[in-house]
Length: 164
Image (tube, rainbow, N blue to C red; front, side, top):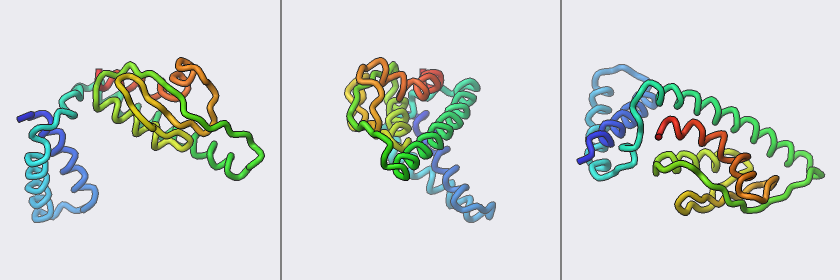
């Protein structure tokens, strides 16, 4: 049994329960604790994804910074895509680019791929080892290094500090 994964899963489940229920009623809280514990034990006994998380103050600090960086990129890319939709004369150059990541952790790669896909104008198409294939609405760099710098590095720098 992977205790760390169960604890992290339970924490995520119970936090989600608290947010969705928005009450401190003892019956609701008790139900949330029981259901969260059951779900964590049932689904996370054999999962190893959360074992890679670095539990430290610096990891928590960089996680908070990561959220602000992600939200900033999300807002910027939303405006960029909206501008392209509202101004059809703007040139677009869609294509799939190859980027490299320095991340070794499965969870860090998952978060990176999802962050890229959640950012309008980019979509993670495939991941193979340290290589990701990204559909980009306006390819600005054909080379791997340039595309990696433009798409991946802003997220990757913080994920390395969180997941090692």
